[in-house]
Amino acid sequence: MANEKLSEAGQFDLKKLVLTTSEGIEVDLSISVNEIIFFESIDSNSISGYINIFDTVGLNNAGPLIGMEYLQIVIATPSMKEKKLQINFDENVLHVIRVVQRVADGNNTVTTLEFVSSELIHSRRTKVNRSLKGSYAELYTTIMQSDLNCKKDLYVESTSGIKQIIAPNLTPFNLFKTFTLKAVGSEHGTPTFHQYENMKGHNFRSIESMYAEGSKATYTESDAGAPVGDKPGLSSGPDMDKKLTKDLETILEFEIKSSRNFLELAPMGALASTLIQHDIIYKNLTITGYNYFANFEPELKKIDNKRKSINFFSGDKDQPLYNNAVVDLQDRRITDFNYTVFVAPTSTIKNKDNVKMDSQFDVHDGEERRYSFEPRRSESWLQTRRGLLINLNSSGTIVMTVHGNTSIVAGDVITVNLKESGSNKSTEDGFDKFYKGNFLIRTLKHTFKFGENKHTMLLECNKDSVTEPFDSDQGFVEPKPTKTGKVFSNKDFYGGSQDYDE
Image (tube, rainbow, N blue to C red):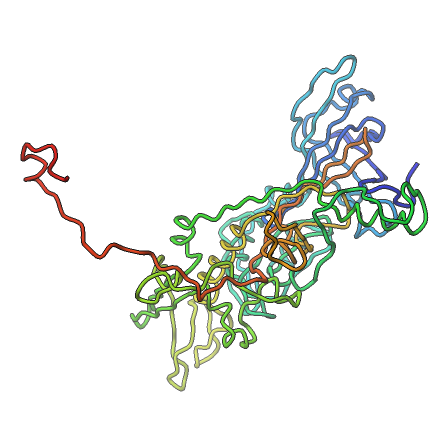
């Protein structure tokens, strides 16, 4: 019987689980399922997962299972009746793509199936081979609804500029990779777009649009099941609600994975880069610089289209992930070195007033030769996108396990507060000064264990700014000896003296 009201953190209701074979035979798996796992990520264009079932219903005889089946799954956290707050693949079915394994377990056979959402299958079957014109947001919406016949909700952020593209026989999802690389949001002018699917639908939107929705939940490092009310062991009433809230907000396990490697990040353009654009018509060069710290300069933050980090949208202080201190005797910061150079083509034309305008070589409007769409504009997306996303992804990932909640999806912002480590406390609230505040859920894994009736979530979360700045006045310049080292050469190597360098 379904639970109408949540009575324990991690509970879930399986409302529907039906497998349809390639021959159209429907099999109810609700009494045979052992475990269901879902994966969603802002770096993945579709939802995927696995289902483990005890073959007590004679699947091999009914099917047999060949990896061409369909799944209807509806799972909800008790008290959450709206479809938006559920995992609901009732009308939009999932596709089984393979039988991972069959393992004998006594008199039963445990079968593991892998599944994906339908749009991934449709994308593999579809090729876009025509001329496209419109903004990236408009093109995305059109292709999703017409070419892929997607009936799910779409979350699409508007983009600036009209593009004309000749799609060279690409699958829709491969075409969307180009869209996300070059799309610039019309709201904040930022090029941080992602194309992904979560439990609510398909998304084509910037990181900033995810930040702007605010925190959906709070998770704190504390002891699960700690006493809440005046009396221990309460099982109903307002104190039980407080206990449930506390348990749902409790981090069961966590790990901090720091993937920041300066030797790798700097050459990739995370800190600073130079873009050289060659005008193929007028044969001149345009040079554009990128500096990571410029996104945090007070005078530049006043510009409406200047990039805004996660703390800006939560009202907290917005500080960079690196120390802005000088690192050498020339008063240079880590972003004042030319680590990376990008080279890209561009083209311009002159209008009737002899003023240079950006151009693209396909169509033009009348005698003025004013094109009705925009060129690639590498300076508006290439360096900024690369620098910002590299730093977001390498900022230090919090990997944590929490009680499951079907209303939380990849792309949501949550508040995370980790306790300050060590005995010397330096913060007033007792939380780590860097690992607190709002974080973006980049990857989410749902695990439903039916034997225990437990739903847990494994979250991978990042943020692109911190609330507590580094003390740049205390910057440490690398010390160097005043005396220059000697230079040894062939006469020393071949001179017959083994101790020539002592």
